[in-house]
Length: 202
Image 1 (cartoon, rainbow, N blue to C red):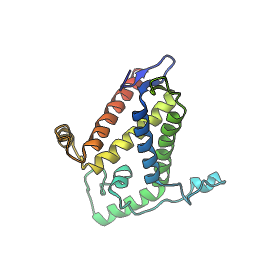
Image 2: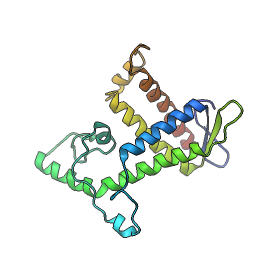
Image 3: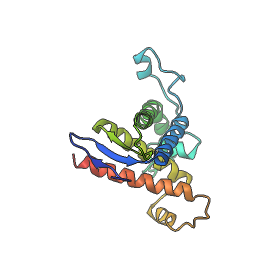
Image 4: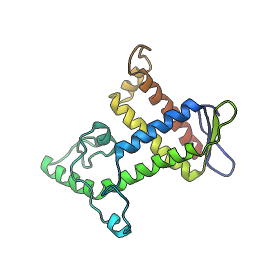
């Protein structure tokens, strides 16, 4: 179990983490929360309908990491599609799409990161300082979303755009200042992969 997720009886997943690993994941999740920012207006509204119909921004974020986490639709910058069609029309479509979807997407990413932080905070350390994290199926899905967001964020900072870039990371010398970030990126990828495999088995 150390270093990878395994299924647990009744559904869900478990992984053994030491104090350093717990601290790293928690710190990264907190940084992700700070990057995503608060909800519309900064505070939750007492009126659920107001939140439901709240419009988000129409312009893409300036931060490259946020652009990767909240990509433009219709072939705009950061999207997975190539731009096909009139650029002005595509920009208008992307702006409209973002206006009605970005708030929800940010809220989901916030929820995922909060589940990660709260589940780590609820762990009980064993004698050696480590602990076994046990997640329900629902918590596992939140973790999967947040692990993906963290890897996208770190990958953007490392300028990883394809598999070839990722392969180069393995060959970085220990003296490279990016090495700690690379190690976190690769480690989170292993956690993500084993969590996906665990959920597929259920």
